[in-house]
Length: 411
Image (cartoon, rainbow, N blue to C red):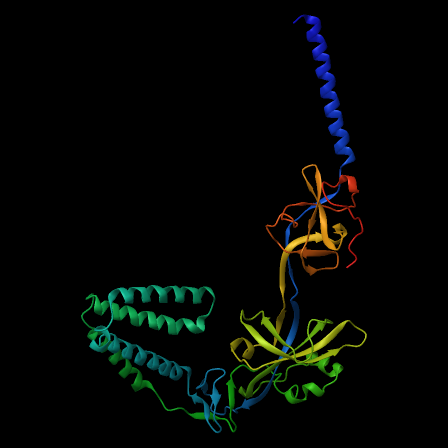
């Protein structure tokens, strides 16, 4: 091949390359479209608001003329019979400590006796005990991490009891006679220090006892809530708590309580609907009923009254709390409303696949103001995660298949 031929081929090749590069640049310029990547998006329709707990409660008063210390006989939420003692009054705090310590030692003594009893040790296997010890240890650890201290004592006692049985079964310890003897000695010493109470506190009606008192107990008549006006209900949030002098607790007539709050107007629920609610003070979800919805004139807010019959520590020991009404949660591929197009009656969107434009169907599971959520699927005829969604109209000759319809979705 002579030099002239080589030069001609070189020129021809150079021209070909320039034509190809130029055509690609023209294609890219003429086919540049604004796109948005399809991503997963979660919509939570929950309603959050601050509210007030209201209960049918009556305070218990006691004029302490002795100067003694009150020791309650009931835990919060327990039923108290009419004319029962709900507390004893002792001369000093040491007397309460002696009694609590005595109760604790008697419980430990009983557990040690049971742990070494043949009726206990003859019917269990070491492997079973090891598994139970591991489970109890994990339970105690989880309770501490969750700050569930009220349950730690019971679970840790069970752990100690199981470990004592394990020590007997495996022969690590023959018996607990020395420990039992020591406990008996301490119990007898405490019994010699205990004095009679100087007074007792009784209730004249039955109910559910609660130590927590905040001064709001007599601020509103529980049974009149439904008849109160919107203005009267709003004023409940501004009421100043009354003095709790000489008040040592209260009685609840029943387990029923109500939660009063102000929320933005919504069509998500009606009166008598059953809802689920969660409070900041507890991870628990409560089932509540909508008793009342009262719009506030001149605003887009309403006062809502919810009721429930499930009583626990979080409900008993709070007056105000932040709440969350729990509704549906949707997760799907987010599609801007401006990108929605139709092929016939099929709703979808155009996407860029390399240099091609293709229509893909969408399965709408949620509609927002300026977007919709399409069901996340592996069917490639539908919009897929990470597809490049076109945000503008396209002409028919730009589409790889099908007929382009550039009318935007109106609903």
